[in-house]
Length: 187
Image (cartoon, rainbow, N blue to C red; front, top):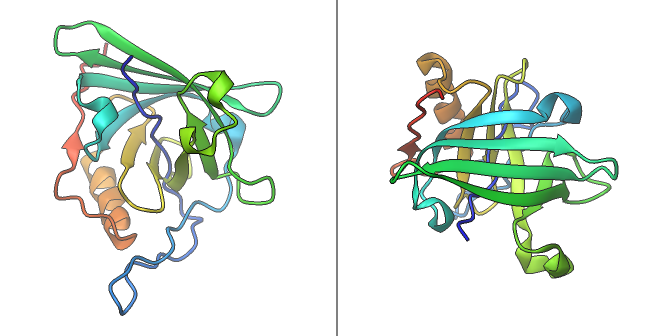
C-alpha cells in the first residue's frame, strides 16, 4: 500500500527563534510554532511543496491531507494523491501529541496498522514549524530536516507568501535544493 506522509503545517509569527547551524556545522534545534489551535488546524490541507521522500514517489499531484479530531484527543489523518495513471491513492493514519507535557505543535504520526502502534519506530515526527496567523498555510518538518511539507488551505498559494515560507525554512537549516512543487489541478 502506498503511504503518503502526513505533512503539512504551519508558519506563524509566534515561533521560537531559529537556530540554523552551530559553529561546528551541526544543526541546532528545530523551532516549532508555540501553540496550535487544534480545532482551527483540522480540515483539509493542500500540499504546495515537499522534499522528496520514498513514500510519495508515485504521487503525480493533487496531494491533500485531511485531519479530523477524535473524541480521545488523537487525530485521524487521511492523505490522498493522484497517481500518474489518474487514479487516487489514499493512506489512513493517526496522529497524537508527541509529549503530553510538550507543545501541541510536536506530533507523532503513524500509517502502520493499529496493532503496531506500541512500537515506537512506526511513529514519525510531525512538527509544525510555521503557521500563518489565519491558518491559511503551514509547514511541517522534523528534527533531522529530512522531511518537509508546505501546506495551504487552497490548492495554490501566493508566491510572495511561498517565498517568505521558504526563506524561513532555510533559516531553520533545511536544504531546499531538491524541493518539489506539487501539481494541484484544483479538482
